Image 1 (tube, rainbow, N blue to C red):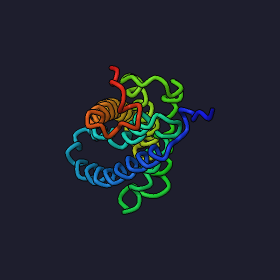
Image 2 (tube, rainbow, N blue to C red):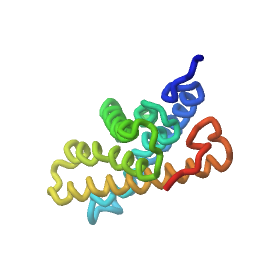
Image 3 (tube, rainbow, N blue to C red):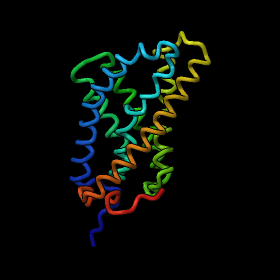
Image 4 (cartoon, rainbow, N blue to C red):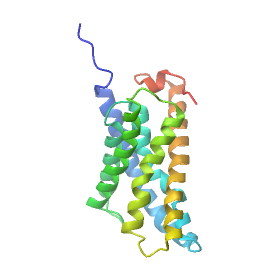
Length: 196
C-alpha cells in the first residue's frame, strides 16, 4: 500500500501556490504605488500609513491556509516579493526578497507550530500577526531610525494590526467565497466548513 503523505505537495498545490504568489506580486506593484501616493495624506502622523501594510503580508498567510502543506506560506510570500521586483519601483532588489523570506517564514512557523492540522480563524490571525513581526521591527531599523520611539512603536503596532485585520479577513473571506464556487475542491480548505 502506497499512501501519500498529507504533507507532500501535489501538482495542483504547486500550480495554485504559484498562481497566488504571482497574482499578489502584481498586486504588490500597485500597492507600492498606493503607498507612495498616500504618504502626504499621513503627513500629520506618518506611522498611521501602516494601516494599509497588511496587504504585503497577505500571500504567506493565504498561501499557507489554502495549500496547507509545509513551505506554502514561505513559497507564496517569497515568490510574490520576487515578482514585485520585476517591473522595478521604490522597493526593489535583494532587500525585498529578505522581507518576503522573513514574512513568509514567520507565517509558516505558526502553521508548523500546529503541525499543519489546526485551521481555525484564530490560527490564521496568529499567522498574520507573526508575519508582521519582521517588518514591524526591520522597517523601523532600515527606513525610520530617525523617528521618536513613540512613533516607531506606533508604526510597529499599526503594521501588526493591519496584518491582523487584512490577513485574517481577506484570507478567510476569500477561501470561503472560493469554496462556495467549488473551485477549491482539490483542497481541504475548500471541502470543509471554515471554523471560527
